[in-house]
Image 1 (cartoon, one colour):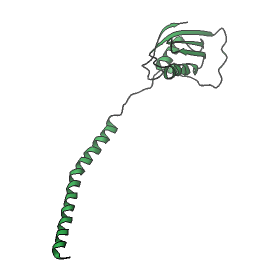
Image 2 (tube, one colour):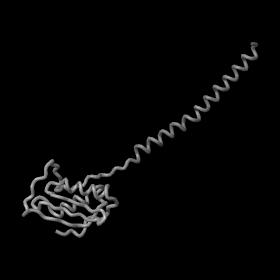
Image 3 (cartoon, helix red, strand yellow):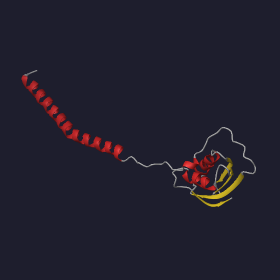
Image 4 (cartoon, helix red, strand yellow):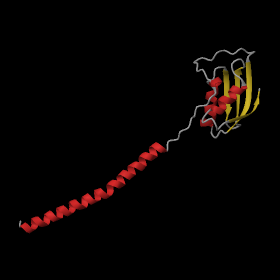
Length: 150
């Protein structure tokens, strides 16, 4: 090869190097800006809500065996539940919460009728506590109890 060919190769390779460097210089700030925006979204857009419901008197005791409830202490509550949208996610969840309470003999939630029937020990639970437990289920805002009948 003659010297002209080497010179042309040198110019071409230098020109390519310059183009690559220009692209890196132009894309580098874009990359940093993109990373900054994505980082801000991950850190800045987290939902900060306190989902704890201060219902101290409704602490449930999970036991493997239900205690026998004396017939004289047994009371039944019937009430409506507004806000349920499905049988599994809403009605079943509320029913499980109620059945998990210490002092509940049975709890049945009927999604179709939007109602519940709870048999409970009146020495352990009150209708007010049952209402608070139902309304605290889920996000604490969805379910509303009405027409409580003992």
